[in-house]
Image (cartoon, rainbow over all chains, first blue to last red; front, side, top):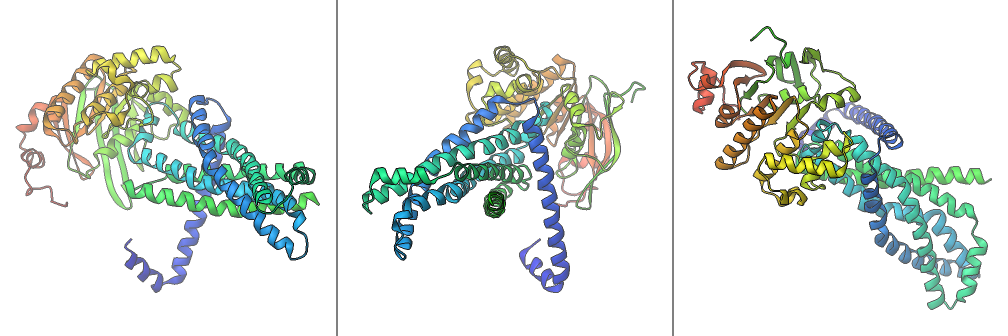
Length: 270
Length: 256
């Protein structure tokens, strides 16, 4: 439909347009759910493709280390400065290490690692699978008696769920180190005391809850990439659209599920 | 048509896209060991005909039978088993670009049949030899090959497991006439060597006559002419005549 035509239609009957887009939204939620269930089922049952799984561990996990590490170090450093300033307003500068550690492990580590993965991995998955769809490689795979879901989707979902927590653990460490760097070099904190304060204060659950979040985010990132790529249509333009949708929907779902999970964890802790 | 059960038959197959009927009660069959070529203009449902037979698209009405047994609506597992008897050469070759040529050719052997990598590689190189590609090509990636070489590799992938039925989707599209002639010759050699049944779609008449025993012309979702390959140039069917002569005026309306 041409944009002008679409505008005219919406203007002519806003209620009908609203109904149409609501139905479309419900339909795509259903389609994503069916896709997710099928993806999980193929990821958890044999036959597996170890070569593919290994490859995705590398592509999604290992090669995301630089970008996740850089994000974490700068965020940790900036966070330390901000909390120091904020804490200074009621003479609480000295709790800065604890707050930085808490903020990184519970929230910023998993969320930032996931967002970087949404940009880096979700887009790459959508583009690769979308291009395979456009050039009939997915059809070809089926005619070669191989289920594309098992070969393409399952390994990526597994890699997302397992690799993002590992990346997050790295991001937590580097993020705290970023805070430590600023604290000791710029703000004259004692290096040993900073580390001891951080370690004494942090509870296992602070870190574990962040890693659980990361696992959910990893699933979202891989799922959105696979779903939009697998359903891409319309050649190069379709692949471009799939990539955009994958990144945008991953990011939004990451934030939404972050709030949800944080709520659940907070209630559970009480 | 003989009384024997055809290898593959479309019976009243109908398929529409967004209200446009692309296949309109298509009836077509191929006898075992014969090579059928479907010709027709762009957008007349040639690709859809093959895709319904492969189960990549599901028809709204009608049946598709392989050896007299229906294949519409099979479960994923049953279809996977069925595909072990089928080889397909896709229009753009559809090679997996993250895999080397030999891994492409041996894809079925490695991922579905559980053949060891060493044996699969040997069989892949054998198949590459059948389509006159040197063993040195085996370790290269699809993007490093010319269009004609990619088609050859695609053909090797289609024949490596000695299928009973081969499908060729526009095998010569995008190739120069000399390369196209070489591909046609290879296809017809391979079909004869394996004794397979073959179904091809093309709008290239030279290709149709080289690889086909029989030719069927598809127009508006139906077969409007069918006959031995040699008769294509002598028939007085007005649709076939217009297509063969390549005229813009005639019974086939110019809708491009």
